[in-house]
Image 1 (cartoon, rainbow over the protein chains, first blue to last red):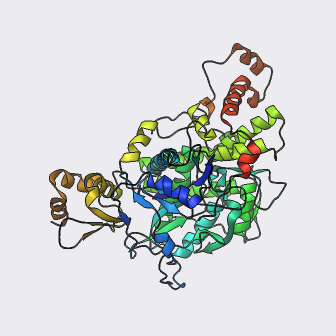
Image 2: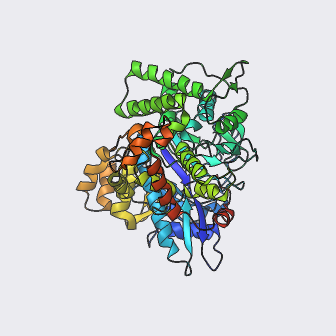
Image 3: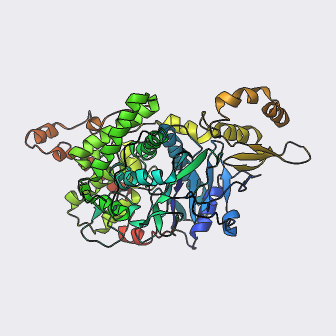
Length: 486
Length: 66
């Protein structure tokens, strides 16, 4: 699994205009090393389609995607500029809780990088980064989740099973926003920042006509065995429980699908419209039309999946990590079935809404008051002193699942149980000799006549258990390569 | 995985003023149970909110992404 986040970026107080591409480049560059490493794009195929009947267009990456600022961090993450935003991709992780940990590490890395980059601006200028998904003026940017899925699961099954799951999950996975993209006065506040920007049920695009199920098929692993599910519907969440469920629930449902244990899917008549409606509905109880002519609510859909996963794990036995996600999923649904607003302090949207409502009550504000719009935005500011979510969390008003020490370690250490361990350890130990890095390979200069390419095609190999001993025994890079191939 | 505190305990504070207990006894509304706490929170947030909300929000314009 892994998470990618495109952060909102803005420059305030600068006497000269700093465009967002430059600002993003400054932020990422502040984390680059002097002798930096290029990204290995040789195995990247973002236009390859997961649907078997759609031909591979074989289009090369756009030239302007290649030259942009890009770096690879000692924790195995990628930090780069994408679409005029700084973007952080966590290293590959094996559990949802690790996704929370390395996602939080990314927030701190980006916030510190922005503070450092601000010092290179003319006097008075500050670069602000926000972990949100829309500017409220028609622009959207993403927070994507990635899952390794066995290719034996037919893609059509993924579409039919995951569409209702994603349509109905904003009740815990949304970070909340004022208003709607449709200027609907009846929607003063909604659960998801992203939902209104979705226009298609299935497709390859991520920036136009965004689809609920994205078909990008770029597994960064053996394509005969795996596909990558690229989930683009999600909000960039800050509350640990929301992030845990955003990635962990999909992981559980995919496990059930891979095991052939999923019940028949509940098909929605119009998934896109249902996604919008469910986001606009703060009760979780709005009837959504099914193909069968009956209706189902978002909470009923979530409970349908939760109950099915619970039965499946009861039969198969759950890991500690799976049991934890299942229990928290059950808990938030149980609270939401009573009153979704009671998720204040557990998930993002309800925490934000409670704050907005307190301001409305104290100051008698209408929904369109500018102070509420500011709170809606500043909730996502990553500066510890200014970010409102951060202030609420620091005051003990938001439940945490990972502590600061764990996050601090994750800024510099890779997860131990995926190939990210190998990538991170290589960078810690031999950064000067690393020429290029990709998700599934590294290219190094070991002083031989040509560079050496180290394939990392299996995301579950190259873990600490696999390679720690080799790193300990090797005196230098050549010895390590000998041990790896020996 | 450190802190596992539940939703019900997150607003508890050992420093609640005595007045609040009286407020509690006279209302059945959950939202009134920690009025002074909420007041203190909003005061704290007032301190950090950007000045000139309207301009700040208007100037927050992003390029579209993925």
